[in-house]
Amino acid sequence: MTYLIRFFGAALVAVLLFPGSASAMTFNCNDAYTADELTICERQNLRDLDDEMGDLYDDALGEAHSQLKYMLEEMQAAWVRARNHCGSTRRCIRRHYRARIRELEGFLERTAVAEPEAPPPAPPGCTFYEHNDYGGASAQLNANEQVSFWGTSWDNKVSSVRVGGGCRLTGYTRALYNGRDETYSSDTPSVGDMNDRISSAQCVCQ
Image (cartoon, rainbow, N blue to C red; front, side, top):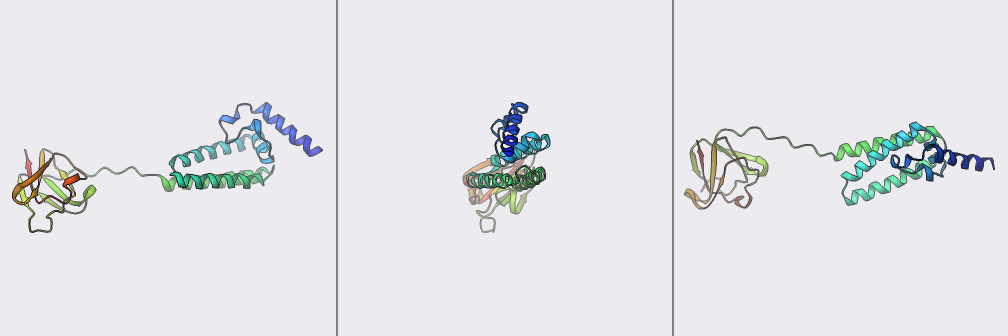
């Protein structure tokens, strides 16, 4: 009987003291009924931990793809069940929150996508690369030079180009500047449907 009085008395305190807490926490203190939830609602420092953990969990869900999101939801549910076992022991509740916060921070650090670095300024003239995004081997044409790749290792190997200021590069699908042509006046990380089709080129600069 004493336990029931204390239990429902704590619930009443939660309703009276925290009527607006639902928007900031992962559960509504007005609906709290487990011993751990009632204890959290009674203590500001525990409510703050719940709020911090909830924000991190929402961020993690926003970063996760569908299958990983399902795993996160399952892990969160398992964590709540483990926290329930703390009952009203504040030290235990704090330990569970801090451990979960570390887990979620680690997840967000691992899944964070670094901002791609801008490539260095294009060298003078025109530069060819064997892979997209200026990767792999490269070869350079000076200003107002031209080249026919036929019979060389660069024939049909160009995938991206960089074009210096005041220059334009025209690539041709056949040797000696014949066939279909495409002109590039700026850095191009992928030459699109000219990929691996350029057999000659001209670099014209002002």
